[in-house]
Amino acid sequence: MFLTIGSLKGSPGATTIAVGLAAQWPGEPAVLLEADPAGGDLAARFGGSVEPGLTTLAAAGRSGARAVLAEHTQLLPVGVSAVLAPPGDAAAAAVGALAASGRAVLAGHPAVVDLGRVSQGGAGMALAAASDRMLLVIRPTMEEQAQLAARLPWLVHATSGRVSLVLTGGGPYSARQITDAYGLPVAAHLAWHPTTAGILSGRTTSRFWRSLRLARQLAILASELESATGRPLVPYPAGATR
Image 1: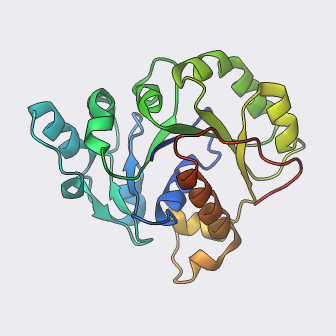
Image 2: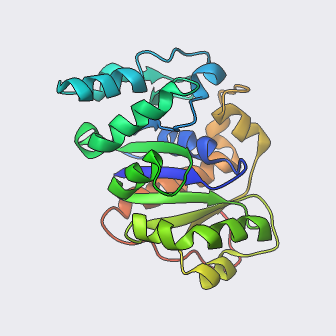
């Protein structure tokens, strides 16, 4: 499974969800790739280094060398092997290089790729187009639905329809209402938990985070995504949350 995750505007939690899904992936461990063209944050948050990481992986791909993904990963405290992006403008070139050969680099590895905010024609969308599925993270509010509606045609076209929504936090709209309005399946509606989100974003620590509600929700979602490889996800039931 080659899974990409992104957002449209604001900070609805796409990076936190990407880390959590990689940490909770069933079976063979998933590799997390931080592929935000605007620059990476995880090295600073978790106290890691940007090398080895996305820049060294991209350089290996450009040189024609066979990229061994494990050689470019670092282990985050939450138990995830991650390819970390540098901060600032250097990330964009690395993401562009990865977009040119993403499937080849990731062949044989379950991978969760954090795209950050996506834009039409951007390198992040090139990765999304190559992925098995894109998850778009939004809050169930009118403002974020307006952003979705404005971008819906090119999002669906770029992913050949392989895009699903993940809703985070509270809002006046249900998963069924959003699916009915935009024709996109909702893979999950996550009840946001600040403690779990803080752990998955490197701001705090806990040995017991996997037992917290958001972590359990992410484990369920990861299992469903893994088992759904090769087939479309069905819309999420009305009014329900994980």
